[in-house]
Length: 118
Image 1 (cartoon, one colour):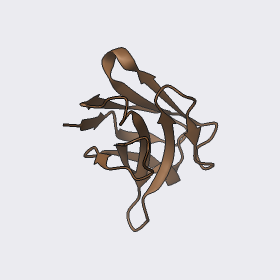
Image 2 (cartoon, helix red, strand yellow; image 1 turned 120 degrees about the vertical axis):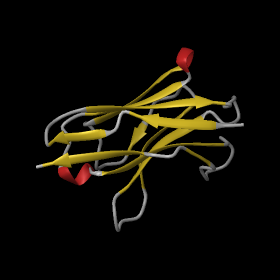
Image 3 (cartoon, one colour; image 1 turned 90 degrees about the vertical axis):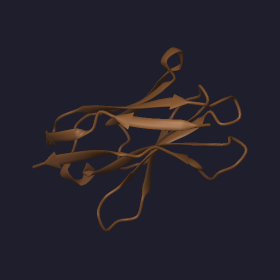
């Protein structure tokens, strides 16, 4: 059974940094395709970035150059390092995983709130 648990959210001023963690269990080679998503109030959920197994991450244009996805396979943990945060980055952030042969993410964490004040 796949479980994803996010942590590391909080409140920060614009220009600051946060690192989100996603502790994963139950993933295997078939489901080791992961991503970070976010959803702000009144807005649709958007993909922040994703990584296929141990490949190079890719990012949404809105976060490129500011956010970095990394993995620690020994700890089964996915990270999202967020630098130069902006008020528009305020959202609930979710970790997700999918079967690598499918495009739809089917495993989701509970989310962690990030609030950036100006």
